[in-house]
Image 1: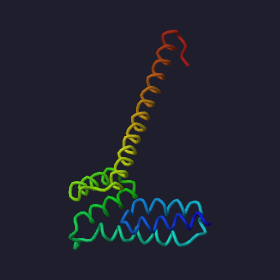
Image 2 (image 1 turned 30 degrees about the vertical axis):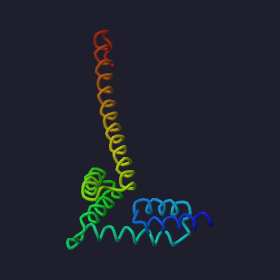
Image 3 (image 1 turned 90 degrees about the vertical axis):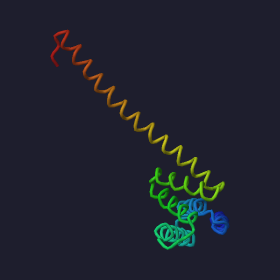
Image 4 (image 1 turned 60 degrees about the vertical axis):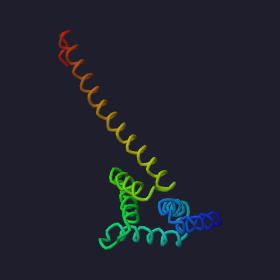
Amino acid sequence: MEEAKEKFKEAKCLYGNKEYLRATDVLSCIALLYPKYEPPRHFYKEIAKMMSKTANNRDEVDFGKITYARAYVAYYNADYKKALNEWEKYTNFTGGTEEVNEYRKKTDMTLKFEGLEKKEAELNTQSEKMLKTGIQKYNWVNGWNV
């Protein structure tokens, strides 16, 4: 439990530095490893609620704050293309941060990996069809109607 308290302290420090992405990941880790330790879950929910509210606030005038929040919400909803798009806006408007650059790279790698998985599935389907067709033709040529 001592490790959980140390990690929670780290998450609060990240939060204080407005590194909400990193703070959320640390809080998620605590919640998974120490499910009975309540404070991180409450803090996690508060960050998510704050980001959602900011992302949808039409009266917010700080474009950097809005784009960060929109990217945050998109990222944790696994809408990685939207997250990257919002982080691009954020970086262009504010100059970016080390945290955002880190998460942009992670997200870019995730999208590339998803693209490779999709391509692999397509190739597997094509090769199965080709193999089935090839076996059928071979059997037909040899008079084996199976």
